[in-house]
Each structure stands twice: as structure tokens, then as C-alpha cells.
Length: 489
Image (cartoon, rainbow, N blue to C red; front, side, top):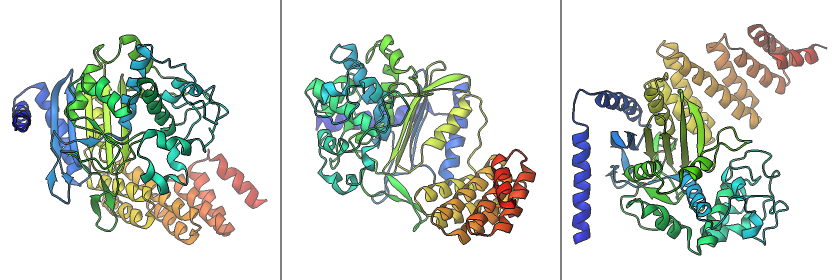
């Protein structure tokens, strides 16, 4: 009873605090609040976002609001206490744990994979270092691509259960040669943590990060556990033309399984400004881009943007999308946790553009149609995607669309045309490409795509005609020149 009362008081305090924080007052912070809210409301208006947003500067909250339902079937609202699945943001926590073990002398990031997995059959097991796993240069791919993974996924209860499947997938290149984002690499890192600590990954995470930082909402689950204040992922449905509850949860072995609230993610963010989790020396190692990657350190993306540096990670799977962005030089933190497929990234992009004085647009109806079209296309539903883009096209023809959105419409329709090319439905592809040539007559790419479809269909004369138009619009189209030379000779 005492615990229940304590939690109730805590929740009420949080709500009162947020209401007080957002009370109208003529300050620079209030101006930022209004600008952020305008961006967010644009997303909410077209049902592109469900979740919680938190924006802070130097740890002080500028904006914290929740929208939508954590569970549409049970009509439960999202709130600041809602726990969201972080998906691949979990990789940043895994990297922090590895660096703690490195810092404590319990392992070295130069240790080879074979030291921990002598049974590993890879011919590069002695060459793959822990640091290669951390920066995705190990040559390993994604265990989820194995043909048996989906069939047997219910049998995987622990991290070690997945290793035999991984051993059947040979590395794609020698360590250090290339950057290739690898869920397999981070699963090995979790298994290494378990070996070194002689505890389950969830226990280590709890003892080394969650408990010391008082991240009371944070929990690691491997599926099926009952969690209070849990958000459920939602996917865009062509049948309902809206978001519905996703089937299943994100795989917990590398990217899924970690649930927490925005407030606790802010605690982790602020701790990283201290030496509580890691020394400055080891944080610098973790946040230094490792070649051949141009932007990835150890479990974190590090890129220049808007005259500053952003250190971040995002995630998306099972109807969730999450963004955790840190701007150490400016003091900003942007956290967007969404239980909508694709719900966080575009919103976070607009917010950081606003904060860093970069151009951005408040979401319009045409942009909303384009975003939905993109999601349907990713779900391999080109016909439904096409209808979304055509709705955006109608607004374009009415003169109510920004130039950047017009380009999104053209590119989206063009991509759908190639979806039909891939399935050898060339007549449909020609029909779709023609939509672009009729509505974007100044686009060399539109005519080039149509010409390619005609050529694949055996309509040589029509292919020549459209390649010639494309070349006239873009005299630097060397590929069109080569094809025309072959067709005419």
C-alpha cells in the first residue's frame, strides 16, 4: 500500500510540475515551447504521431507532452510515465556497458571474438575485435535475415539461444574493411557482457546503469512479461487507413526489449555529462567516429549538423520509433518516443532544425500523404502507396504545395513505378511513370524512368523518344547518352 501511495504521489507531482512548467510566461523558453508545440501539433493533426516528446536544455525541461494512445484497443492515453520500447537506442546502453567493463579492466575493446567464443566457426573470429562489434565494422550482418529466424523465434528465450543460428552465417567481409550496420555484432556484445559479469544482460544493465541513475521506469524484457504503463506498437494499416496495434513485439536480443519513460532517458542523458557512468577519456573513445564509418562511434552516431555536433541513436521496429539526440555544445536534448511506426524521426528532425535555426516546414496535408505513401511502399503495398501520392499530387496541382514536398511527390511516384518494374508489371510501371512526365514535365529523371520502362517492354522507339527528352532536360545524363548510342546504332 505504501508503494502504491508513493507512486501515486510521484505521478501527481510529475503532472503538477509539468503543468507549472508550461504555464504561459513571456520568456525565451516559452517562445521555444510554442514553436515546438506548433511543430508537434502539425504531426498530431494528420495522425502521424502518438507518443511522448521531451526537449530540454542543460537538463531543464523546455517541453514535455504526450499524445495518442498507448493501447488503442483499451483506450489508454500516453503520458510522461508511459514506457516505450527504445528499439536500437538500446545499442547505446550496450556500448556504455562495454566501455564500463573496459574502464574497469574486466575486458579490452581490443579483445578478439574468439577469446569469448572459441567455438565460433568464422575464419575471422581471431581478427574481429570488440571494437569492430561496437562500430559495425566486423563484417557480420543481421541474424534476422536467416531463413529459420522467423520460424524459430519463439524458441529463443535467452541471448545464447541465438548463437547457433548466427554461426551458420559467414561474415561478409574482413573486419575493418567496411561499415555495415550489424544487429549480430551487438548480440555478441550482450553475450560478452554476460560472460564477463557471469550474470544475465538485464541484471547487469539494472545494476550498472538503471539503479545508480534511479531510472525507475527502465526495464529489460525478453518478451511476454507484464509491464505497467507499457506502450504497444502500432503500424499503419491499408485496410483501416489508420494505425492499428502491431502483431508481436520487437525482438529483444539486440534492438528490442528495453522499455522506459522519457524522464528516465533524460536521467541517462544528464549522467553522461558527469563521470558517473564513464570517465571523460572513455566517453571520448565511445563518441569518436571510427573509420571506415563517416559517422558512427561505439554504439552512437556522431555527426555535424547546424553548426554543432549531434550525438544520437534512433530505433524502429514492431510499431515503435524512437529518437534520442544530444547536442553537448548547445546543451539541448531531444527525446521523441513514439508507438507509431515512423512516428518519431521526422518530428525530431523538425524540432532540431528549429532549435538550430535550420529551415523546416510545419507538416502539411500533402506532406502527410507523402509520409503515408512512403510507409505503405515500405510495407510492399504499391497500389495503396500510389493512392496516397496521388492525393498529394492533387494538392500540388492546386498550387498548395512547397517545392520540397513537390519533389517528394515526384520521387515517391517514381519509386512506386520501379516497384512495378521489379515485379515485371511493365504496363503498370509505364502508367505510373507517365503520371510524373505529365505533371513534372521539367524533370529529366521522370522521362529517363519512363524510357527505361519502355525499353524493358521492347518499345524501342518510345524509349528513344523519352531518353532524348531526358537528355535535352539534362545534357549531363551520360547513361542516357550511352543507351541512345546503342539503340541508334
